[in-house]
Amino acid sequence: PTTNPAQAGPNPLSSDFNMSPFIGFSINYFPLNMNNPTVGPVFQQLYFRQAFQATVDTPAIIKNVYRGYAYPTNSGVPTLPHSPELAPSLYGNAFTFSIAKAKALLTSHGWDVSTDPGTCVKPGTAPGDCGAGIKKGQQLSFKLQYASGSTPLTVIMQNLESTAGQAGIKLTLSAEAGEVITANDIACKPAKSTPCTWQMGTWGAGWIYAPDYYPTGEDLFLTGSVANYGNYIDAKNDQLIRDTLAPAATNQTMFTWEKYISSQVPVIWMPNFANPLYEVAKNLDRKSVV
Image (cartoon, rainbow, N blue to C red; front, side, top):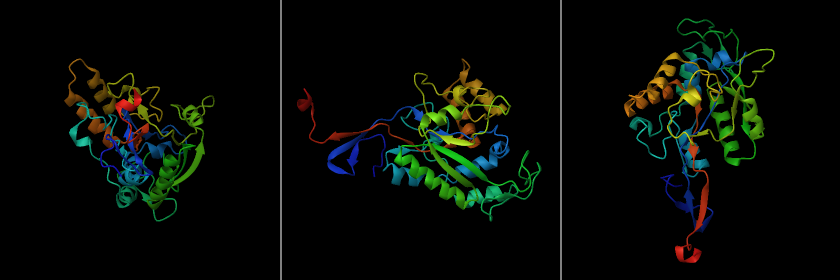
């Protein structure tokens, strides 16, 4: 596996070719529908999102699925290509893979994760309770749709199903056409005329900042934004985003917002990857293509 996803490296399938990666200015993630009438109250809990994030085995995905041609997503700003807009502390993997941490977060907030799936045993809104809108006996059981046709994405989702399950979070996977997921996983509000039943969904590619290359966050994470598919709402985040849009904004302004949105886990951050990844013949030179 390569140690630098932005540089060409060996092709593991043929010694006659090198792999030449293209790194777009993008982030990879999938949203949780916080307005879902059944599971939305769970998704609205910060502790749950942090626990779920802790079950994403980013190092293993980068090494074993993408052969090193991938890198972490830690916030709303891409970690590659390098840019002055990203806080230096967010270049590495900001989230430690830890089933123990995920379990601790859930058990300290009223969930029994010795069952499969985990169950709320302390409903309520006091410290140590499951949180607003969550009933006693509610289970950590969710439906996760992912785009069909991609072997890497299928492997990643199956891995997440396994690791999340070890923490008491049961995922029921289903593969759907990518266009079906992007059509269904939209910002919505529970209403008779507006179905809002989707729970989790990934089209496998996140978001690319183009042609709007300045990643200030209003497109994806501002309350009410059309592309805020999971209906994440947080007043402090809204203000920090507006600060980044002010004429007096600096890189430090961006850093403050990035660190906050990273810890908020408004979506599940997933490893990003080189796309496309070209195969280039080692004997190819300028003279041979003139």
